[in-house]
Length: 252
Image (tube, rainbow, N blue to C red; front, side):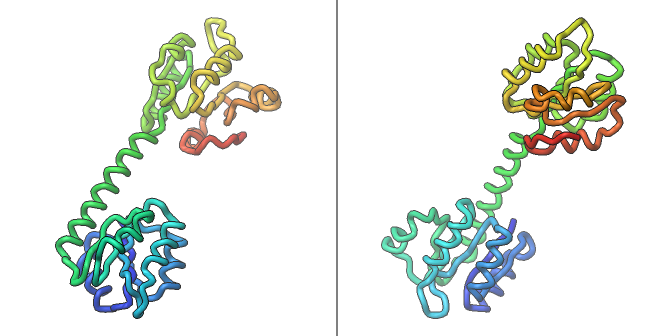
């Protein structure tokens, strides 16, 4: 977790570094210009900001600029005097905590750990929410086994028939669908594609076919299929990269 501190007292900055450098990535600033340039390029999770800087009460103006850059950075305000007028002034900036001087280091340490735990929990939740869920419609056992091995890192659903694709639960959670153009049992690919677009609205589509040139030229396929790969499939790293990418239409 990154922490930026903004204080014109170098002893205080040294104290912050001593307190947090072993656990966190901390950068201290005693210059407003350096601070603003850095935060504009790399966002921290926490900003510790002294309300008074070089004899002037400009902490509010700096906090406003920080909020203009990020709505999610946790801001901790340090001041020699905290009252309800100051708190009211900062209310719209969603300040995480106000601490008065002399700084209670145990309290500050507890606050930083609290933010770190919340950040870790959020990252873990985001990781679960955005885990790539992959569905593959492939009717040959050999290819299904190969896909199962190659794509084991994803949440994988392997469907042999179109009906299995229809019965799959939580369709809205599927990020990517891989379809084989040549399906057995006289399945009509256009029907499969229409169903996929209708019921798997959040998923990007990857098409695999023995010959993709004509398919890539056909506008009705270009409009709804993000990636085209030709058999025999041997570029699994490229397909995996396509799965991880956002829904940008790219022809491979």
